[in-house]
Amino acid sequence: MPEKFLHPNAVRVASALRELGATGEIVVLPESAPTATAAAGQLGCEVGAIANSLIFDADGAPLLVLTSGAHRVDVELIARTAGVQRVRRAAPEFVREATGQPIGGVAPVGHPAPIRTFVDTWLDKHHEVWAAGGHPHTVFPTTFDELLRITDGTAVEVE
Image 1 (cartoon, rainbow, N blue to C red):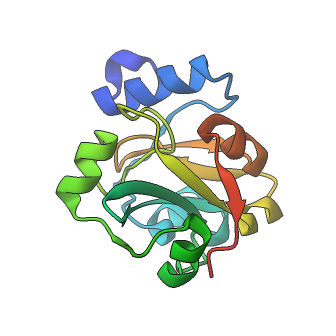
Image 2: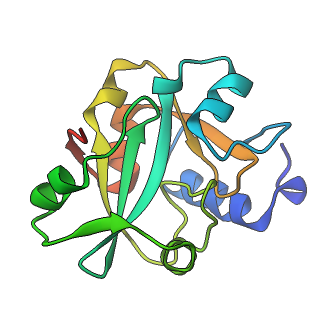
């Protein structure tokens, strides 16, 4: 889709994807997809192939966990893995400040500054995964390996 029709957040994400050499392009969904189930339904894929972008407050610093839509994040496990005292779901204002994007549309890239990122190993079970594109109506296709590369992420188990 031509960028002139995209939300400014999706334009930033598309630009970041190009700069990082990612292969996927932004796709605009007909309806908002604030959940993995909603996105999977519109894309016709398994919910596990949706890479949920969850921002956590890890001792005051943002932590992005890209988890399979089929998983719930064990915050105690993530805290141990991250080497921090406490990990909790971030407030919407914290998410917007860290990413410049709203909850329900947080992309793995295109943030004002790099964010420490964990990528759920379960996503490697899918040939293609879908991640948010900076807005609840946008997504892009990618792979587990590409997510690791473009986010400088660490592969972890999340549950």
